[in-house]
Amino acid sequence: MPGGIDPHTHLAFEFMGTETMDDFFTGQAAALAGGTTMHIDFVIPVDGSLTAGFEAYEKKSKKACMDFGFHMAITKWDEVVSKEMEIMVQEKGINSFKFFMAYKGALMINDDLLLEGFKKCKSLGALAMVHAENGDAVYEGQKRMIELGITGPEGHALSRPAVLEGEATARAIRLASFINTPLYVVHVMSIDAMEEIAKARISGQKVIGEPVVSGLVLNDSWLWDSDFLTAARFVMSPPIRAAGHDKALQAALSTGVLQLVGTDHCAFNSKQKALGIDDFRKIPNGVNGIEERMHLVWDTMVESGQISVTDYVRITSTDCARIFNIYPRKGAILAGSDADIIILNPNSSFEISAKSHHSRSDTNVFEGRRGKGKVEVTIAGGRIVWQNDELKVVPGSGKYIKLPPYNYLFSGIDKAEANYLASLKAPVKRTIISKA
Ligand SMILES: NC(=O)NCCC(=O)O
Ligand SMILES: [Zn+2]
Image 1 (spheres, rainbow, N blue to C red):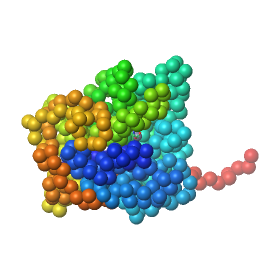
Image 2 (cartoon, rainbow, N blue to C red):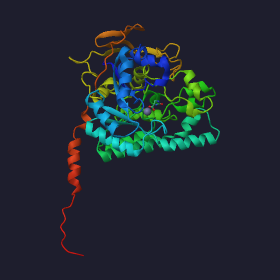
Image 3 (tube, rainbow, N blue to C red):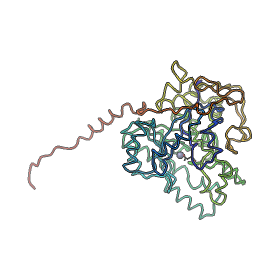
Image 4 (spheres, rainbow, N blue to C red):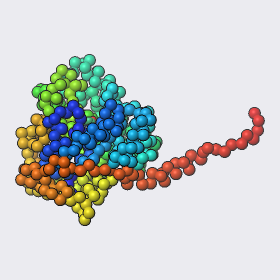
């Protein structure tokens, strides 16, 4: 089958340190062992500059061993950012921008910027993506937990309940509808958010919903563990939800309400997670997933009978290639495609552990999990890069893949725009008939 494409990784945060940076920039053993042959990572602007951010990431990725693309976060708004978005799309091969509706005081943007960003995305044929949580309410929730003396990792989940994810998802969907531009909701973690996406899609709106592997197979019970480091490793945003949300997200994926599976792979080691020992707000947000995604999605969705093998290929590879506009170069095994291929043995078993995984991180949120469906061979660009538990890569062989604008979601946008303008019946041509 075609190699996995992970639509949503966060491997490259500066402060993650050299161990986890290796997942992205050097060995990339975790991804390749996990059957992922391409991933799309987030570029955070450097000091607010998109160009500086792009250049820094480009430089660091010189030793990459697997293909990669970039999204870019928009964290402020002015004429320079607006112009830089044009350069990113038209010259640098970025066709999507992520807007953080949470992380107040850091990455968060308000509705004003969201509207400006959506308009700009539409004009460039770029896909607007949202991290959907109400950041102001989360901030309030965090204060409330601290006042109640709840300083541990459970405070993380309690401070940002599913209703705040549902609210922000609904708001982003409505604003995207108002602007008439497609929307991609990353890491959908709750029934609340999923139902908003379902409603929008039923109404004909172009909205893509991406659950991540952690949200599909885990629940929040670990956050109440009495061992701080065990609990802290599950801290991510939006939070991993109570049991029930996982099953509902699986059902939504199997029925096409949600479209493709990401990871938001953002692995921190124990030392980094320990930064929040006295205050959950200081625990770095993020969990692993890039090595586990293909295995766990097979086991949870195919082995359980919820989806077919064809659907598995679609949700782990083909739809991502289509949405980010690189199909059939990626996401297919066809003449002329990139020959990114994996051999997955459905009868082979796996057991996940930080002791045996290939990320340099010392923790794993899927610790102890067993299942069926193991990637045995990974081929990238026609070369075997993973076989018999051995990595065979050449540093620097990974290519930066430019992602062209105007994916299929944009077809018909101009007609919808024309219909909208026609429906206004305005401006009304007036004459002054009588004087008051
Ligand atoms: N998801 C998460 O907790 N970490 C990565 C940053 C983000 O996407 O919010
Ligand atoms: Zn996010």
